[in-house]
Amino acid sequence: MSNKLFGTDGIRGVANLFPMTAEVSFRLAQVLSVEVCNKEKRIAIAKDTRISGDMLESAFVAGFTSMGVSVIKMGVVPTPLVTSQTKNLSVDMAVMITASHNPYQDNGIKLINSKGDKFDDEQTAKIEELLTSNETFVPSKDAIGKVFEDVKSIESYMETARKVVPNYNALKGLRVVIDCANGAFSKIMPQIFKDLGAGVITLSNMPDGYNINKDCGSQHTQNLQDVVVQSKAHLGVAVDGDGDRIIICDEKGNRIDGDQIIAFLATYFHEHKMLKNNAVVATIWSNLGLEKYLHSLGIDYYRSAVGERYVIDKMRQVGSNVGGEESGHMVLSDYCTTGDALVTALVISDGLLKTGKKMSNIFPLFEKCPCEINNIRFQSVGEAVYALNAASVRDTIAKAKRKIENQGSVIVRKSGTEPVVKVRVEGEDEILVSDVSNMIVAEISKYK
Image 1 (tube, rainbow, N blue to C red):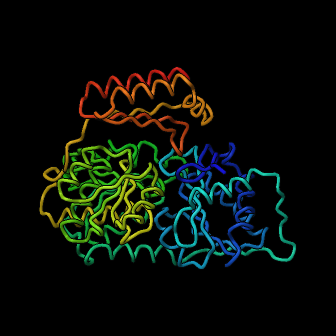
Image 2 (cartoon, rainbow, N blue to C red; image 1 turned 90 degrees about the horizontal axis):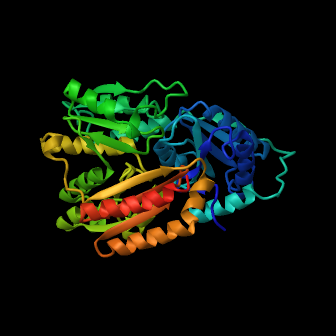
Image 3 (cartoon, rainbow, N blue to C red; image 1 turned 90 degrees about the vertical axis):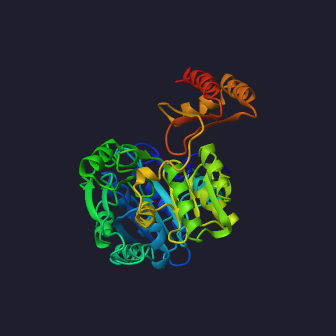
């Protein structure tokens, strides 16, 4: 079995086009009712702020309740809230309706088990096989599920988040600009920072169904950077639509990416003797400079495949409590089960105040090795897959790897969430990196 609909973080696509349709959501609910919801006969459903969330939620509710499974509606909440609170709801699983950092036209489905972990590849492959089969699922004649509103999870999550820092005045004196991406953290994140004593300027916290991630959030940080400088804030924090990514900027407006954030978190945990098993996990996509920096501190460094789930798996294998991705997913397993932008922002803020330094005097923590990343967008996932499988593309990639062998690395992969082929070339020699990158990109682009 293999996944065609499920990528690295669930199913994703354009809302109202296959597979992000009400019909697919209804049938998926039926499949999950039979395959997963066998114990509690209850499921939780949450969503981000995009306009299509209501439609897909309604289809899921109808599908589950028709099969005798009751539904707890969590409303608009961030993904990390769902993963942390699911275990408290006495449910068989949870569904998070979100397309994360994608524009409002897209939507997605993340499947979360009763412990708060996302479904693994084997589970999603089995679900997908049933979803795309001709098997008929007969609604229940004798039992119809009920629908409940969740009224406890938000405050429970917020109270847990407040405890990440030592006390309610821990962030007093901090001036922070928070870009909420017009997403699921729009109300929660600014309030938590205020509760903990910080001075807060909030951006993009007025979602209207259409403006999620639009020129804001972790993917579009220029406005955040400008406001931080104008307001003389200590730092800026940007999250994505469902709150599992974070990007920050310093007081001068310099953007700080995920690799630098991992380096800061690792340093902080290491210095305060909180780093478990002396280990940090990042992905094959992280810069070689991060590895060199962590090794200089005597920290063991491990790489996983690209995707938050794979980071978490590797963290559990090596016993680490700090892991992340260059894209901004940060997992601090002492506090959360998956990537959590709020928890990460609180740890960074507390750590910054404890240093007594300006951010620009801390970052960058390491110098990056030359690296070029190109995203080649196609009209569909099928076209992207076709390009990657083309003989000339495979030959070019093989030639490129031979050319940079022992001097760097080449990674070419299809995005797990978009019809995009990602090309990453890294090495010590900037000219060689550029030549190899251009060679691969030119060949793949012939298939657009």
